[in-house]
Length: 416
Image (cartoon, rainbow, N blue to C red; front, side, top):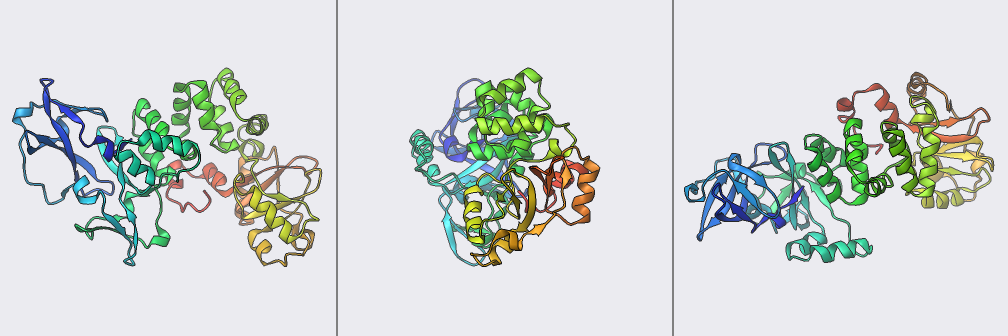
């Protein structure tokens, strides 16, 4: 993963290990959804020359190496579908389809996919400004201290190249529908990378985003990433994933390594993972997540709403809130809509649905999909012989059971 600001000005060496020039800009083709780099625009002896991308043998933040001789490089007019990345987009104002200014393009993110270097996102965060003026380390320290806004990467698919001009960059959506680069999209690109590049991408991402990307990756790539990481770094990555995703991943690792990683995780998360691993992998218990919303039956709607606010950060879905007694026995369920429309003083037991559809911890994958499909559920509670609620199976987990990964990614991401 690269940021354009950290690439510009880098030295570029030629086939004779002489300075061919410094990187002035990147030439990209606008034919693809994610534009591909077609050439390096270099400043050589005060003039611009272009080095075709197929002459680049090494491309890093510190320097790049060409297989061509610097003296043989020449300038040329850009093709009809080519443009200069920095000159066209950097520092321009983002404008949505309603003509509203969103924010300035502070930086541009690029990613390697095999031999291809592609543009994937616009960075509109304040961190990008610090990065560009050489204060990236200061930005990192501020971020770790929790005082700096999180990086914001706008998916390049929302950029309308044809409607952009010298003053602004046009978007294809209104501001209210502006979407950031989704972890599933980053995972798709990461699948095409080498193991080293894949690890570098995850390392460059914010912790929570890295966890989401890891969860979206194919299981074989997940295991490969963890096996290549030191235990401490691997456990930190796992701490930012949901317990059910962690359990699925660790089930594919050697037992000794899995136990070492669990021991390094935060205690509450480690206990959840151990519980999930105790169930057969393809049973309801092995598939469920232990992150769900629950309230006692004697609480009022107002109290339940406050409980939901405190639980929201850790729960998998808020569409259903489960009602459990002091022994965690499942007594009922109600929807978020039920909660929002109920008078604040009304008791939960008075508007919950009793005897909710549930599945036993030993239930099979076929039973899971049949129940969710038959009753049109967004989530299915998982209980033991005594009716104690142990977790829920969300519809996206059920989709995983019946659809290939490629098909799942075509569905709307409303449950993530």
